[in-house]
Length: 183
Image (cartoon, rainbow, N blue to C red):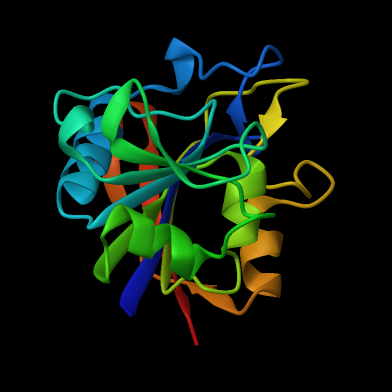
């Protein structure tokens, strides 16, 4: 197997990916970030996320994906999405899940939530961190398990990732995306 691992998230100024009710609010949705995210996922061989994460885009049903869940033991096809494999990492390895999903190489896009992001922290080739500096979500859900105790930047740095040059996604709201790359 030959994979390239990339993470994708947009966060508020306080490092949150969702509000206190674990929902991504409209205040964290920006057209430029949405387009960047959609194009990235269109080129991915596999999308990996938890049960509460989903990109909800027109091409979503066409994308191969692994959905992490503790509700099952054996790998199984999601009855509602034929391109999705339900995966419990306690009962099957990532390699076994990929084999079940018939994906052997390519870019793997990790899209959350916090536990899923953390599972792949030492595998990322690039983590694309989009930031909305004018949005605050007090009491929200941090993008990584250690947020808000630590900043997203501190978490990525502690796992050997280094920030590259940010790209502007939405000048009106100062929303940028920064590639954090390994070594």
